[in-house]
Image 1 (cartoon, rainbow, N blue to C red):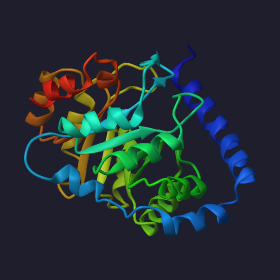
Image 2 (image 1 turned 60 degrees about the vertical axis):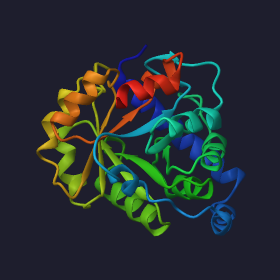
Image 3 (image 1 turned 120 degrees about the horizontal axis):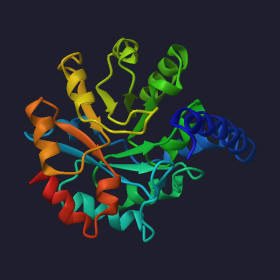
Amino acid sequence: MQNAPDVLERIIAHKHREIAAARAARPVEALVERLAAAPPVRDFAAALRAGPGMHVIAEVKRASPSAGLIRADVDPPAIAREYETHGAACISVLTDAEFFGGCLADLEAVRNAVSAPVLRKDFLLDRYQVVEARAAGADCVLLIAECLDDCRLRDLYFYAAELGMESLIEIYEPENLERVLKLEPALVGVNNRNLRTMQTDLAHSIALRERVPERCLLVSESGISRREDVQRLLAANVTAMLVGETLMRAPDIGEKLRELLA
């Protein structure tokens, strides 16, 4: 596999082509017309703050550039229901096709199958994708700070809010935290995966926790595979996490989620 920066650059370049093709196939005006029929927005941030203990965003994820195929027998609505039954506060759906094997149809199917709020997880670079997300029923979108300059990050964040959605703003590089916090977001995700080495380290979330104000909920992402990892996060006052690969690889998804939440 190419090193991570090259993969990220490839993903972004492909995403620009994908957005252009989508615009040509369906103008944004046609998408906007669909918004009136979209289901009401569910409160993503509130679901992650409801009650004590750890709150999980459980992810429907077929594959990734670093791991390849994760699970072959993927029925997104069935997996989402399993997640919800076993304690997931929210559901994340990867909608990137080229690198993660997902699609917007997965998100729509999941949104119709569960009552938990749903996140569109993708590489969002353009307002068109934000409209796509809401039209498909998303309650929240992922915005990756490393992929967006200040102007574009601010624009997409406030446009998502205009459409009623929350944004989970993800960072890896600590220097991005300050510019993200200027937006006063309800949610900040810290990716524990080093985008250069692809190694994960929970200490990354823990180290940044003290720099995130209490009004902003920190979500720890990647590298969470054992109950001990969850306990370590809770001890550092991290009460929300996003887990995908660990659950998708488990023979019994519900049992693995129960194990993490104990």
